[in-house]
Length: 150
Image (cartoon, rainbow, N blue to C red; front, side, top):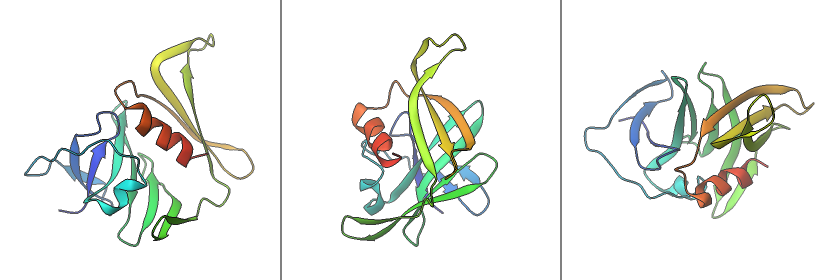
């Protein structure tokens, strides 16, 4: 086993993920994990989450050296925070900004149940954008991600 992470949408589907290779498998013994905000998950055996969009997986997880990473489907990784001690965290984003907004159609109307995440560098240049279904995610979990990436 490398690292257990949960499905961001369902909050309880667990996979065993190997960050070195990007490969994953279902664990031999299924685990059910309550929906908790990602900062609280640091102390649990489940170290992050994944979201699948159009067959591509996005990962957000804590490394063994206490760093929160965001990994894109192409393997690109971004360091976000380091857990120092207790409830203290060091911001490692270096100007990286995340924006979570309701997803919209081309005509500007909202797409019910979907959010769009945009990642910008420190100059404001858009680095990545993805829209995903979040309707089954509890509002506390979604709000926790929204607060974390402001």
